[in-house]
Length: 272
Image (cartoon, rainbow, N blue to C red; front, side, top):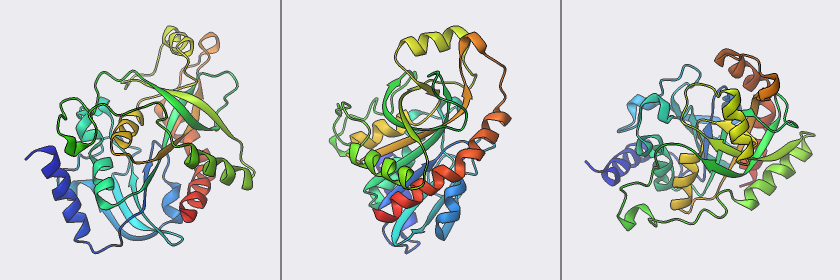
């Protein structure tokens, strides 16, 4: 079964649940799950029940697809995503984005936990991604030669939708939350970076570093699905003052900022 057939099978299985067509898709990253408290949940489905979905192997990712409403807006939310370092192909990682589009999703919000390399970024800060640098070793569009997947050479001059970004800023301001902006670099992982790597990535123009998001954004752009992404700064990556950090600490910091980010996402989704 090829990728298009797999997407069709997963989409048909979900549509058989007789839920209203979702208009907004959400991808919740490491340690970020509070948004589910804003969702009036109709269905919460473990990934392993959905045809052709990968299974999340990261402990902090619950591995559930949620169908429900935020306000009057029907949504589909991924409670946990997939990563290249888990051993999945890029097409597997981005499979849910294609399914969301096939379900009828019109706009996509993504979140992640990231290391802050910009000296002005502190733990717990929320950063709206204005652009990215892709240093993943593979591309989710490789080998997809049929126009049925979208253009083979999608334009990436504005990978993040300015209108969605503006809505996130307005929501943050209304809630008294500072939403900064920055450039995200996506690396393979799963190890964290060395001091020399932080210096290199900062010189390359990145403010944040993480191990996700960019593959999904590439596919969203191929599908002409407007998207926006927000990072939670979970550790400060100053190579001259670098301290060891554990994944447990990263998850804990993400959790402290999760409520603020979830309130912002919920406010935006309810208006879409």
